[in-house]
Every structure is written in C-alpha cells, then in structure tokens.
Amino acid sequence: MPRAMLDYTKTILQKVSFDAKLFAKELQKAVSRLLPSEIEELKIWLEYFILDKPELHPTLILIKA
Image (tube, rainbow, N blue to C red; front, side, top):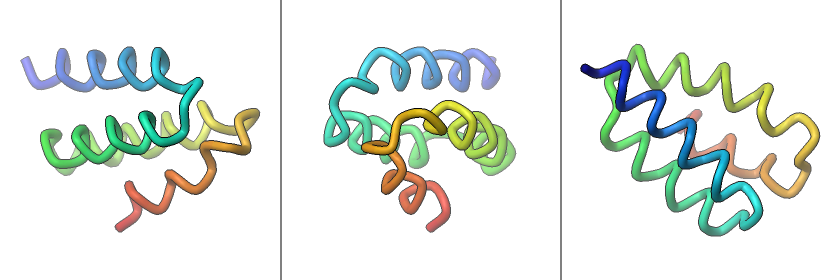
C-alpha cells in the first residue's frame, strides 16, 4: 500500500510541474506523508525529473531539509 502513495505522489508532481509554486506545495505535502525510505526514493526520482526544468531546481531544498 505505501508504494501506491509514492507512485501517486510522482504522478501528481508530474502533472503540476508547469507551476513551480504548486510543485513546491505538493512536494511539501508529499514529504510530510511519505515514509523516510519513500522520501529517499522520491529524492532520487526528483533529481532526474527536474534535470531539464531549471525553474524547479530550488524545490530540491524542500526534500533535503
């Protein structure tokens, strides 16, 4: 079941990636709801996902905090 939450989070983040503020808000919600191991996996995914999206680079701070 927890895996489903991680997959859902990735889907939501992909859908809102057009807006940096909304993306940051959804990322904060995800970090508060996911397990520590899932957060680590999300962090790895996020680093690859935002490679070509410079406007989203500042959001990495939210997941490293």
